[in-house]
Length: 91
Image (cartoon, rainbow, N blue to C red; front, top):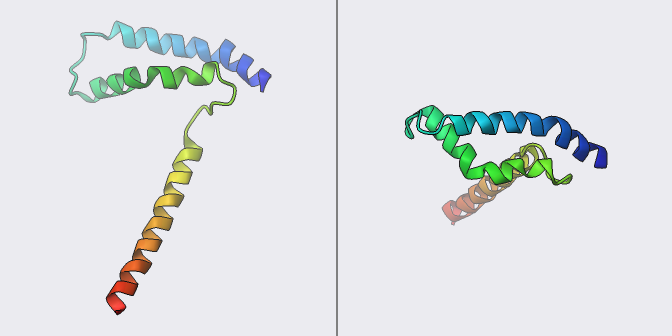
C-alpha cells in the first residue's frame, strides 16, 4: 500500500494539479447553467474528497464498489417491496 501511495503522490498528483489549474483558470469564463459550468461546479464542490486518494492509501481511486453495493441494495429493496405488494394484493 505504501507503493500505491507513493505512485499516487508522484504520478496522479501531477495530473490533479493540471486539472485544478485549468479549472481555476476557467473562473468567470463559463455559464453556471451550462454543462461545462455544472461539471466544474461539481468538481469544485467535491475537490477535497476527490483529492483524498492522493494522501490516503485506503481511499479507492473510484467509487465502483459503492456503486455496485448501491445497485445490490436497490435490487433487494425492489424485490422485497414486490413481495410485500404481492402479499397485500393476495389478502
